[in-house]
Length: 29
Image 1 (cartoon, one colour):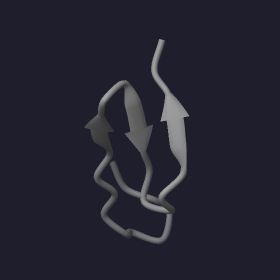
Image 2 (spheres, one colour; image 1 turned 180 degrees about the vertical axis):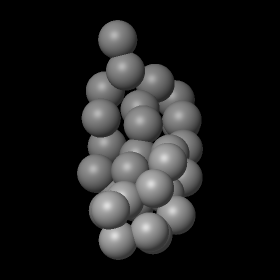
Image 3 (cartoon, helix red, strand yellow; image 1 turned 180 degrees about the horizontal axis):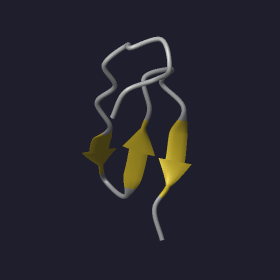
């Protein structure tokens, strides 16, 4: 995934949560 700025983004799945490049955790259903 790339932001419009071209910054590479890698999402990490960890124990039912997904962390974006800002460190925000999203609960996975």
